[in-house]
Amino acid sequence: MHVLLLNGPNLNLLGQREPGIYGCDTLATIETELTREAKADGVELVCFQSNFEGALIERIHQAMGESQGILINAGAYTHSSIAIRDALTGVAIPYVELHLSNTHAREPFRHQSYLAGRAVGVVSGFGAKSYSLALSGLVHHLRQGG
Image 1 (spheres, rainbow, N blue to C red):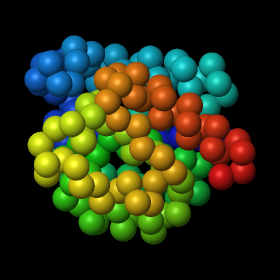
Image 2: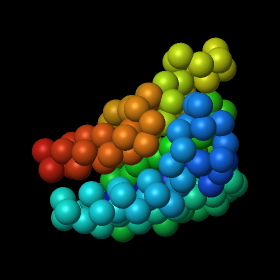
Image 3: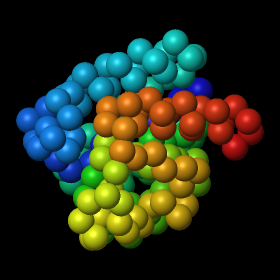
């Protein structure tokens, strides 16, 4: 099974950016741990991060015929990108939206997600553990025939 992990804008700054909200783990640390967890579960995980909407959309398109599932932390694009939603819908690959922080406990503009309505599930608010929980949920869904 092949799963694509997408991380959006500013997630390359994890470990430095607002650690009180996002924690102290770097993206590299999160990706390394998640890759280890995935491998132990028989899943090949490919990680991709970009600060550019178009690059994320291109990577979603490339996942067709390659990935059985997508994990996506679109960062601020969650609340603004219809284009990413359309790309995810267009490739018809099951995906889980995830966030380090609980977006519903933050500013009102973060309460809206353009991605959640089409997602298999949404995981937020558990810090770096959100990635592991999202992977577990997606793999379970895919193995159940989803």
